[in-house]
Length: 199
Image: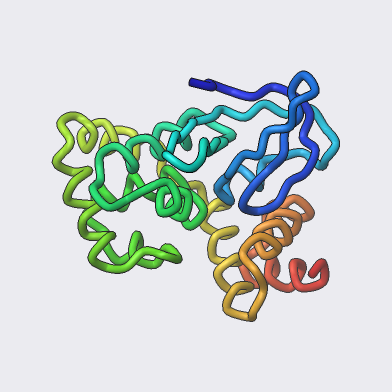
Protein backbone atom coordinates (compact mmCIF):
# COMPACT_ATOMS: atom_id res chain seq x y z
CA UNK A 1 0.00 0.00 0.00
CA UNK A 2 1.26 3.50 -0.86
CA UNK A 3 0.35 5.76 2.07
CA UNK A 4 1.46 9.09 0.58
CA UNK A 5 3.53 10.78 -2.11
CA UNK A 6 5.99 13.51 -1.15
CA UNK A 7 7.64 15.01 -4.19
CA UNK A 8 7.31 17.57 -6.97
CA UNK A 9 3.99 18.48 -8.54
CA UNK A 10 4.56 18.26 -12.30
CA UNK A 11 1.02 18.82 -13.58
CA UNK A 12 -2.34 19.61 -11.97
CA UNK A 13 -5.79 19.24 -13.50
CA UNK A 14 -9.16 19.38 -11.70
CA UNK A 15 -9.41 15.57 -11.87
CA UNK A 16 -5.81 14.40 -11.65
CA UNK A 17 -2.25 15.35 -10.81
CA UNK A 18 1.21 14.12 -11.73
CA UNK A 19 3.70 13.90 -8.88
CA UNK A 20 7.36 13.04 -9.39
CA UNK A 21 8.99 11.16 -6.52
CA UNK A 22 12.58 10.00 -6.86
CA UNK A 23 12.53 10.21 -10.64
CA UNK A 24 9.25 8.28 -10.96
CA UNK A 25 6.09 10.08 -12.11
CA UNK A 26 2.84 9.03 -10.45
CA UNK A 27 -0.57 9.77 -11.95
CA UNK A 28 -2.99 10.46 -9.12
CA UNK A 29 -6.74 10.94 -9.39
CA UNK A 30 -7.95 13.74 -7.11
CA UNK A 31 -11.21 15.42 -6.05
CA UNK A 32 -11.88 19.12 -6.65
CA UNK A 33 -11.35 19.82 -2.93
CA UNK A 34 -7.74 18.64 -3.25
CA UNK A 35 -7.17 20.44 -6.55
CA UNK A 36 -8.14 23.73 -4.87
CA UNK A 37 -5.32 23.25 -2.34
CA UNK A 38 -2.53 22.34 -4.77
CA UNK A 39 0.36 24.74 -5.38
CA UNK A 40 1.20 25.98 -8.87
CA UNK A 41 3.47 23.45 -10.67
CA UNK A 42 6.36 22.87 -10.45
CA UNK A 43 6.32 22.89 -6.65
CA UNK A 44 6.80 20.56 -3.73
CA UNK A 45 3.67 18.69 -2.69
CA UNK A 46 2.55 15.93 -0.34
CA UNK A 47 -0.58 13.93 -1.11
CA UNK A 48 -2.13 11.24 1.07
CA UNK A 49 -3.04 8.31 -1.16
CA UNK A 50 -5.25 5.28 -1.52
CA UNK A 51 -4.32 2.52 -3.99
CA UNK A 52 -7.10 0.62 -5.77
CA UNK A 53 -5.97 -2.61 -7.41
CA UNK A 54 -8.13 -3.92 -10.24
CA UNK A 55 -7.55 -6.78 -12.65
CA UNK A 56 -6.70 -4.36 -15.44
CA UNK A 57 -5.10 -1.46 -13.56
CA UNK A 58 -3.55 -0.10 -10.35
CA UNK A 59 -5.18 3.29 -9.67
CA UNK A 60 -3.84 5.82 -7.20
CA UNK A 61 -6.15 8.37 -5.57
CA UNK A 62 -4.74 11.43 -3.81
CA UNK A 63 -6.05 13.72 -1.07
CA UNK A 64 -4.91 16.93 0.61
CA UNK A 65 -6.27 15.99 4.06
CA UNK A 66 -6.88 12.96 6.28
CA UNK A 67 -10.60 13.81 6.40
CA UNK A 68 -10.91 13.61 2.61
CA UNK A 69 -9.16 10.25 2.42
CA UNK A 70 -11.15 8.87 5.37
CA UNK A 71 -14.46 9.84 3.74
CA UNK A 72 -13.33 8.37 0.39
CA UNK A 73 -12.49 5.06 2.10
CA UNK A 74 -15.72 5.06 4.10
CA UNK A 75 -17.79 5.54 0.93
CA UNK A 76 -16.07 2.86 -1.17
CA UNK A 77 -15.93 0.33 1.70
CA UNK A 78 -19.30 0.93 3.36
CA UNK A 79 -21.82 1.91 0.67
CA UNK A 80 -22.78 -0.76 -1.85
CA UNK A 81 -22.68 0.50 -5.42
CA UNK A 82 -20.34 3.42 -4.64
CA UNK A 83 -16.90 3.03 -6.18
CA UNK A 84 -13.90 5.37 -6.41
CA UNK A 85 -15.42 7.46 -9.24
CA UNK A 86 -18.59 8.29 -7.30
CA UNK A 87 -16.63 8.81 -4.06
CA UNK A 88 -14.47 11.41 -5.85
CA UNK A 89 -17.64 13.05 -7.21
CA UNK A 90 -18.96 13.41 -3.64
CA UNK A 91 -15.70 15.02 -2.48
CA UNK A 92 -15.71 17.31 -5.52
CA UNK A 93 -19.33 18.32 -5.03
CA UNK A 94 -19.37 19.18 -1.32
CA UNK A 95 -16.99 19.63 1.59
CA UNK A 96 -16.40 16.80 4.07
CA UNK A 97 -18.05 18.94 6.73
CA UNK A 98 -21.16 19.61 4.63
CA UNK A 99 -21.41 15.93 3.69
CA UNK A 100 -21.26 14.83 7.32
CA UNK A 101 -23.91 17.38 8.27
CA UNK A 102 -26.15 16.17 5.42
CA UNK A 103 -25.88 12.52 6.55
CA UNK A 104 -26.53 13.39 10.18
CA UNK A 105 -29.57 15.53 9.32
CA UNK A 106 -30.88 13.03 6.73
CA UNK A 107 -30.54 15.70 4.02
CA UNK A 108 -30.78 13.47 0.92
CA UNK A 109 -31.52 16.44 -1.38
CA UNK A 110 -28.13 18.09 -0.73
CA UNK A 111 -26.21 14.88 -1.50
CA UNK A 112 -28.37 14.17 -4.56
CA UNK A 113 -27.28 17.52 -6.05
CA UNK A 114 -23.73 16.18 -6.45
CA UNK A 115 -23.02 15.66 -10.14
CA UNK A 116 -23.19 11.97 -11.04
CA UNK A 117 -25.34 10.95 -8.05
CA UNK A 118 -29.05 10.34 -8.28
CA UNK A 119 -31.64 10.47 -5.55
CA UNK A 120 -31.56 6.68 -5.05
CA UNK A 121 -27.79 6.61 -4.55
CA UNK A 122 -27.99 9.59 -2.20
CA UNK A 123 -30.67 7.82 -0.15
CA UNK A 124 -28.54 4.67 -0.03
CA UNK A 125 -25.50 6.69 1.16
CA UNK A 126 -27.50 8.33 3.97
CA UNK A 127 -29.13 5.07 5.10
CA UNK A 128 -25.98 2.95 5.00
CA UNK A 129 -23.73 5.51 6.67
CA UNK A 130 -26.25 6.37 9.38
CA UNK A 131 -26.40 2.66 10.18
CA UNK A 132 -22.65 2.47 10.71
CA UNK A 133 -22.12 2.10 14.46
CA UNK A 134 -20.41 5.17 15.87
CA UNK A 135 -20.09 7.04 12.58
CA UNK A 136 -23.32 9.00 12.85
CA UNK A 137 -22.79 9.88 16.53
CA UNK A 138 -19.22 11.05 15.92
CA UNK A 139 -20.32 13.12 12.93
CA UNK A 140 -23.19 14.64 14.90
CA UNK A 141 -20.75 15.84 17.56
CA UNK A 142 -18.30 17.09 14.94
CA UNK A 143 -20.92 18.93 12.89
CA UNK A 144 -22.21 20.67 16.02
CA UNK A 145 -18.68 21.92 16.74
CA UNK A 146 -17.72 22.70 13.17
CA UNK A 147 -20.58 24.44 11.43
CA UNK A 148 -19.44 25.76 8.03
CA UNK A 149 -18.16 29.31 8.45
CA UNK A 150 -20.10 32.21 6.88
CA UNK A 151 -17.13 32.66 4.51
CA UNK A 152 -17.29 29.02 3.37
CA UNK A 153 -21.04 29.31 2.78
CA UNK A 154 -20.57 32.57 0.84
CA UNK A 155 -17.89 31.03 -1.42
CA UNK A 156 -20.15 28.03 -2.05
CA UNK A 157 -23.09 30.30 -2.99
CA UNK A 158 -20.84 32.34 -5.31
CA UNK A 159 -19.54 29.18 -7.00
CA UNK A 160 -23.09 27.93 -7.58
CA UNK A 161 -24.03 31.30 -9.12
CA UNK A 162 -21.02 31.21 -11.45
CA UNK A 163 -21.78 27.62 -12.50
CA UNK A 164 -25.35 28.74 -13.29
CA UNK A 165 -23.82 31.41 -15.56
CA UNK A 166 -22.05 28.67 -17.51
CA UNK A 167 -18.58 28.59 -15.94
CA UNK A 168 -16.87 25.31 -15.08
CA UNK A 169 -16.70 24.31 -11.42
CA UNK A 170 -12.88 24.46 -11.27
CA UNK A 171 -12.57 27.99 -12.63
CA UNK A 172 -15.61 29.20 -10.66
CA UNK A 173 -14.07 27.89 -7.43
CA UNK A 174 -10.70 29.54 -8.06
CA UNK A 175 -12.23 32.88 -9.04
CA UNK A 176 -14.59 32.93 -6.03
CA UNK A 177 -11.75 32.14 -3.61
CA UNK A 178 -9.57 34.83 -5.20
CA UNK A 179 -12.45 37.31 -4.84
CA UNK A 180 -12.80 36.42 -1.14
CA UNK A 181 -9.05 36.81 -0.61
CA UNK A 182 -9.25 40.27 -2.21
CA UNK A 183 -12.09 41.31 0.11
CA UNK A 184 -12.76 38.92 3.05
CA UNK A 185 -15.94 40.84 3.97
CA UNK A 186 -17.46 40.79 0.48
CA UNK A 187 -21.11 39.80 0.06
CA UNK A 188 -21.99 36.92 -2.28
CA UNK A 189 -23.07 39.42 -4.96
CA UNK A 190 -19.80 41.38 -4.66
CA UNK A 191 -17.84 38.14 -4.79
CA UNK A 192 -19.61 37.08 -7.98
CA UNK A 193 -18.94 40.49 -9.59
CA UNK A 194 -15.26 40.35 -8.64
CA UNK A 195 -14.99 36.72 -9.81
CA UNK A 196 -16.52 37.64 -13.20
CA UNK A 197 -13.76 40.22 -13.70
CA UNK A 198 -11.20 37.47 -13.17
CA UNK A 199 -12.83 34.92 -15.47
